[in-house]
Structures are given as C-alpha cells and as structure tokens.
Amino acid sequence: MLKKLFTLIIVSFIKLSIFAQCAMCKAGAEQSLERGSTAVHWINYAIIFLMSIPLILIFSLYMLHKQNQKKNQNEISS
Image 1: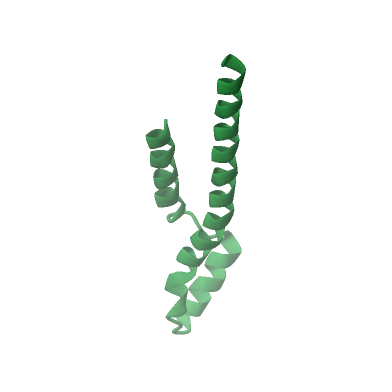
Image 2: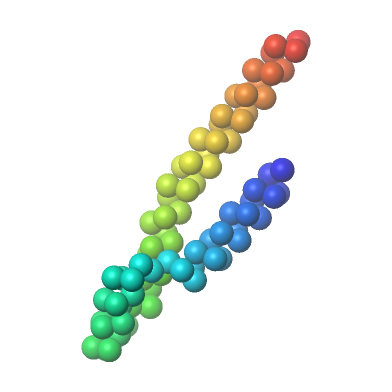
C-alpha cells in the first residue's frame, strides 16, 4: 500500500513539472525571457516547491490518522 502511494506521489510530481505554470505566469515568464532574464527557467521548480509543502503536510496528517486508526482497531479487538 505504501509503495503504491509513494509511486503515485512521484508520478504526480513528474506530471506537475510539465503543467506547473498558469497562463499569467507563463505570459510573464515568456516576456521576461524575451528581455533576456535567466531566472525564468526556475519558475516551474519554485511553483512545484511551493506546492510540495502543503502536500507533504497533508500526507503526514493522513499517515498519522491511519496509524491511530489501526492502533484503535488493535485495542478494540484485544
């Protein structure tokens, strides 16, 4: 189960790197690139980094909930 979830997360991050920019971000990045800015190439990585923190927190809360649920089931059946 954990391997499937880990694989799903990895595949999601790979897919997110392709579609990370919204239309306004992309337009601004293209204009900056035309002006000669080199920082534009890092915008996708910054967006993915900012998205990863909430995802990690949600995943951690989910895992804690599952562990507590399993612990409660073991106490009830004992």
